[in-house]
Image (cartoon, rainbow, N blue to C red; front, side, top):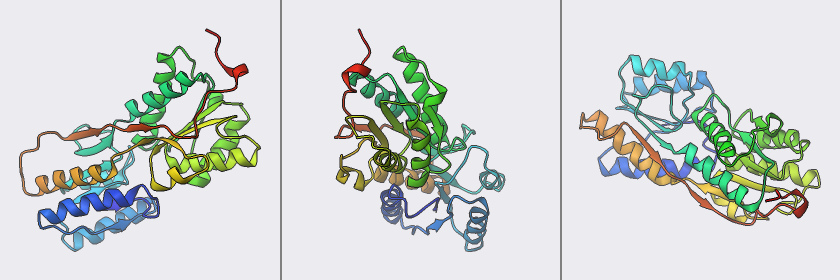
Length: 276
């Protein structure tokens, strides 16, 4: 299994789910950390092929991905995990990113927010691109305009990237920030505190994934929970089905998130609320 960053708390539950499902069928999981670098992905893939791995779970894909293209050409069994691709035929287990974004924006609008900013994940990934599109579509559905000054693309899915993006966005005076994942939200929280912006009284903040630490923050983070363990298990079962040439019911599985409302979101100050 290729993962972009094993230190990211999002991935261990996915790995555990995949490992348990694989062992049920007599397979063992071998883990490769790539640091989201193409050359490391290629090296890991080469080693796995040399050691006669039966198939690949790939959690590192980008929409323009040379490594993935080579796997396709070789007809090596694979399943994409969390991040999808531009090729509809690629087997994948993903989050319903559009629905997650829609539910987050709806929650913030229901609270009275109109200046809702978005820290997008890297737009080279489906998670970054689809959540950004979902954010814009959801704003339009609520009669709001997607202001370019309220959107920033993070360089990576990391606390530091979220911090940098939030420092840029805070100058545009949003009343809420929707971050494309929890690590980005952690960085945004740090930037807000440094700038003297209080969460949630001055700024509401929402993430995606519900990694374990975010419930322990002050304030605890509102986030869209991803069923990580289920994602890993489904992907492993799909891959084993491909390896053993079993019929595949569906090539793309979309998992819904659940909005978990905690203390990081609240109504904006009355002067910022939209007049009905």
